[in-house]
Image (cartoon, rainbow, N blue to C red; front, top):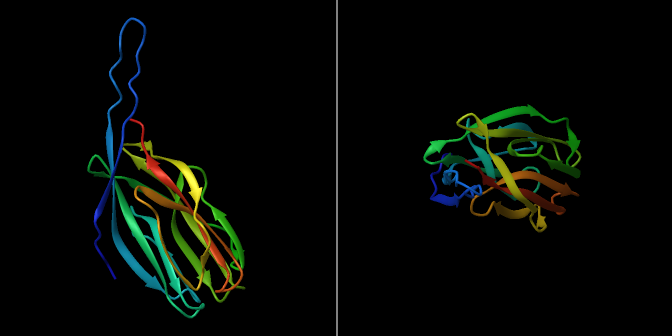
Amino acid sequence: MRTYGKALSVTVVAAALSAATMASPASAAVTITMERIYTETVWEAMGIAFSCPPNQVLTGRSHYGDERAGTTYHCSRILINGEQVQVHAGDWTSPQRESRSDYSAPDHQVVVGRWHEDDENGDTRYRSAALYWQGRQVRLTNGDSSGAYKESSHSWQAAHGKVMTGRTHFGDENGKTWYRFATVSFEG
């Protein structure tokens, strides 16, 4: 299922550098826009790997029910000054047991996929990606973690200008899930 969402805009302004005798030109201000453009529901217990479409990143996840219920993922594309950011996805992580899983993407990387099989005793894997604009890496700042959600009854969306950078889960479908997120930034 493909959905189109409202564009979100975040402006990042780089500071002007100055010297005692002459001022250098200010770094160019950039406008970072995030558009949620893809949503898909998968049945994880069947071992279906989910990855966002090319050049998109995870910005939300919802799950209602046990391992037989669907999990919905929300993906967004990131634009800087109207030009799409390139998403360079890496390999899948080694498996970890879902009932005590804890994953954080490497520094300045986002989560673009999740692969889960079976119930809470099954394996969970993640896929991260680096972001590039005009050949330079896009940075993630102000990393934080959400409050706890009951896995079997929640919907989480990254706040304005933020992307998913990790997830922790303990227990079965009645256990708790936390999300890690960070702000997309670029210094011109």
